[in-house]
Image (cartoon, rainbow, N blue to C red; front, side, top):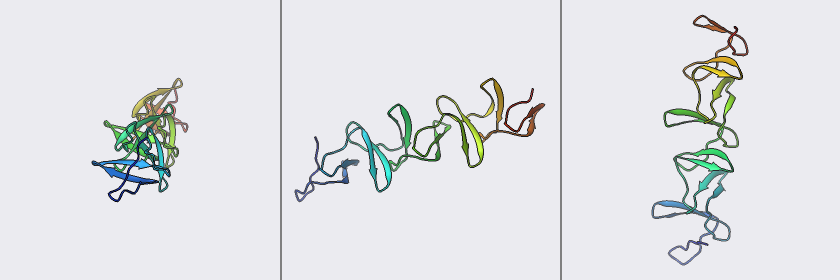
Length: 154
C-alpha cells in the first residue's frame, strides 16, 4: 500500500494529491487508490494501476467503455468526439451502442459506439441519418420515402 505524507510529516487522507505532475487519490485511511473509480465532489474519476488519475482517455471498466475528460471527470449524458468519430455516454457514463434518443432526436451508434451517418441497415430496415447523425423521418431522401418510424418505405 502507498501513502502520501506532506512536508510536515502529516499523512494525507481522503484527498487528491499532486506529485511529480500527476494526481493521485488517497482514501480515509490514507491508502492510495489504484485501478478503480473514485467519487470526489460529486464527480467520478478513474485512477489507473499506478494510482494516476486518467485524463482525456477511454476507460474499460466491468466490460463497459467510459470516457474521462481533460480534468479526469467521467462524461455522462454527453457526446464526445474521439478519433474523428462521435460517441454518446449515458447517465451512468457507459458508452451507448444501437439506437439512442438525445434531445428528441434519434441516432444510431454502431457496435463500436461510433455515431453513424448516411444510409444504415438495422434489423432488415434501411434508415437515413443526416450528417449530424440524427434520423430522418416523414420525408423523402432522393427518391426514397421515409416513414414516421424513420424506415425506408419500400
